[in-house]
Length: 116
Image (cartoon, rainbow, N blue to C red):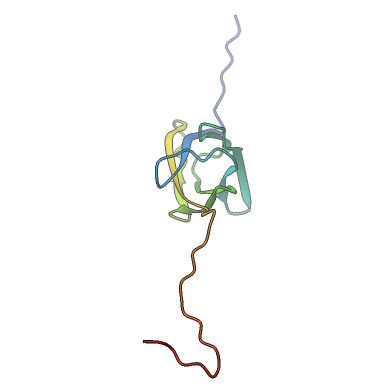
């Protein structure tokens, strides 16, 4: 009988992407950056993701890129990969893109006085 011994060299991060209201972000990518290295995962329709290939002993900056999200809160979520276990239950929160923009103000034309 042969015994095969190995050492795990990469880990994963599992989690969910939601907006401030708690609804899942259903499209886009989760990015995990360490220096010049970038790992990414596609966000599933339930808001879940799994980023593969994270190296132990490194700290990654997680962020979300999605047409449904203006930005991630905080802008970057720092996560250290300890080299013992996968990261589970990572929660990323976004501010959603607004489908409309409201503008309020006053317009005055030259030669006219404002009514009070």
